[in-house]
Amino acid sequence: MSRYREINLDLIHTYAASERRSKVETAQEGKPPYPGMTVKEFLDRMPGILKANDLKAIARSVVEAKHLGKPVIVMLGGHVIKTGCSPILIDLAGRGLVSHFASNGSAAIHDTELALFGRTSEDVDIQLETGAFGMAADLADFINKGVKNAIPEMEGFGEAIGRCLIEQGAPFGKRTLIANCYELNIPYTIHVALGTDIVHQHPGADGSAIGEASLRDFRILAETVSGLGNGGVVINFGSAVILPEVFLKCLSVARNIGHDVRRFTTANFDMIQHYRPNENVVRRPVLPGGKGYSITGHHEIMIPLLAAAIVELIR
Image 1: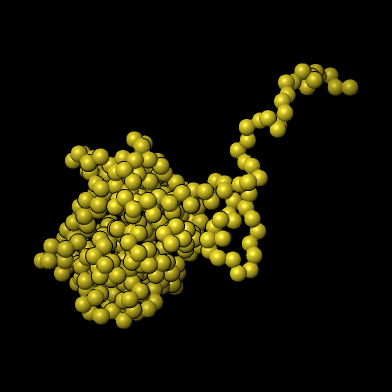
Image 2 (image 1 turned 180 degrees about the vertical axis):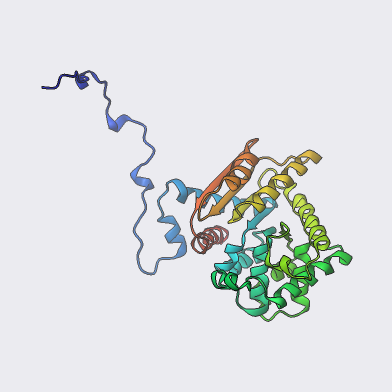
């Protein structure tokens, strides 16, 4: 027998599980798929629990924003373009479900490469060893000349690149997000940090032009952000630092000027949840009212899934 006393479990107070309030019920469980099921049936058969519920809630918020005439802003990093999601985002824009795209420089570079050459994403491991990484002159010339052209036209960075792709008849331009936004008259703003993009390492890079055009895009994005209140939506796809920081400053500007930017929805989709997106997109902006969501998963899976949920709601 042990030398130490044990607690007497006969003294505990119990209750009936059948009378306890519980978070999960059988009605919320998922249903197995079957061959030939529709997208709607697939979505309806997902468990009505946690992130599956959040995904549907975000989709509903996008559709409600469209009905209310409120902005839906989609922010994105380069990996979104590299994983083949541009055509899906273009379709949402064409349906009037996205009113503003904002990206870092890398997303715009990948999108432009695909438009001009039908391919993107060099092998950095191999190219870096010889110093060839990012040294594609034709791509750099196109973007650096495009941003210089933005200055006399008083255009933003994204607007100028979209116009150049259209005017020069980019061979694969029909599938590029930037060019489609230009044709649809939807703002696509590019927000860069000098030295972060491969086109900055070329002699044709003009820091003054890049800075002026990107700053104009900041003001264009801030104008869209000013209309988010009472039903707008902001979704961040995979930008871990640049766009969350830019968005927070745009929000501060809009509120400072006097716009009531409260009671809107935010969401962060990424393969790994990072500090800045969750603070600057999901949590801080909706403290005065609204709802923020975090969804973890690969873009090539989650973006088509969210788009499917949105499209099903507007049928």
